[in-house]
Structure formats: C-alpha cells, structure tokens
Image 1 (cartoon, one colour):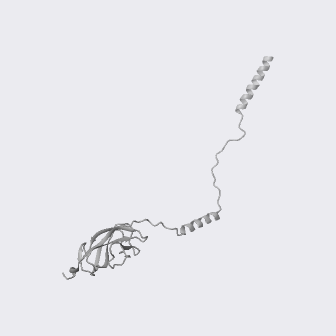
Image 2: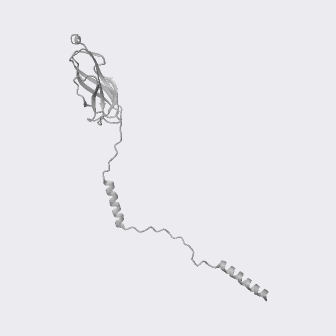
Image 3: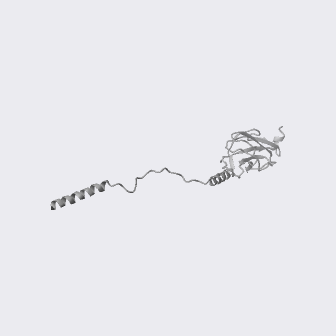
Length: 183
C-alpha cells in the first residue's frame, strides 16, 4: 500500500507538472499595433505656415561675394619714360591698364600719388570705371616743374575701403631749359 500511495503521489505530481507546462498564458498574446500619429489642430498648421511665409518674406541680408582688386600696367600711351620737356610745360599723360581683379571699378575707386612730385595733378582723383577683366585708360594732366632735372611721380589705385592695390604706374620726365627752344 505504501508503494501504491507513492505511486499515486508520484502520478499526481507528474500530472501536475505536465499540466502546469501546458497551461495557457493568462496575460494574452502580444499584438503589433500600427503607429497612429497624433492629430494636429488645423489652426496650428495654418499658424506655422503663416510664420514660415513671414520668415521667407523677410529681407535677409544677402552675403556679398568677396571680390579681389588688382590693376596690371600694360603700357604708356603718351609721354614715354625719360621724355624731355620744357619747364612749366603742360603734360597729358595716359596709361593703359588692365582690371585683373574680380571687382568692378566704380566711382568710389581712386588714383593717388604715392611717391614723387605731384606736378599740379589732382590727388586723389577718380579711377576710370572698368569691369573686371577689361582694359582701361587712365588720363591725367601734369605741369612740368620749373627747375631742370629728372622727375618721377608714382601713382597707385585705391579701393573704396582705402586699401591700395595693383602695381604703381609712373610719369618719368626730364625737364631741360633748352627743350622749349628746340621745337
């Protein structure tokens, strides 16, 4: 009987174990829900669109592209270097230059005396307007000094911010008292 009791207990235990393994989960089977975004009030969407339009309509500063200034001397068009002139003679000097920078020269650009005698020429004076990549002619009127001797006057271009650029260009003359009688 004891063996029967053990058998019964053992059978009962095995039955409970088997039944326990097959028991269904009472928590339920997980399901995949489809994401549903939150609903937005149409008034909020309209407000956001209006504000975005206002920001777009605001005149934001447009960045100015940085350009570079440069002047290349090409040739003397009048009064070659070393030309002999009479004292006090009026001189019409012209230089051919090239705007080799990327900035366009406008009326804010100047030519200034940087070395030598001014010889009655205006300094500063407006630089001839020229588009980037084009040639220009600079014309200035000088008066030869009254004293005989060699004179060299150097001129240079200046940007609107006051910075010099390019190479200097010159008027280079020799004043001789007898130059007026040779003609």
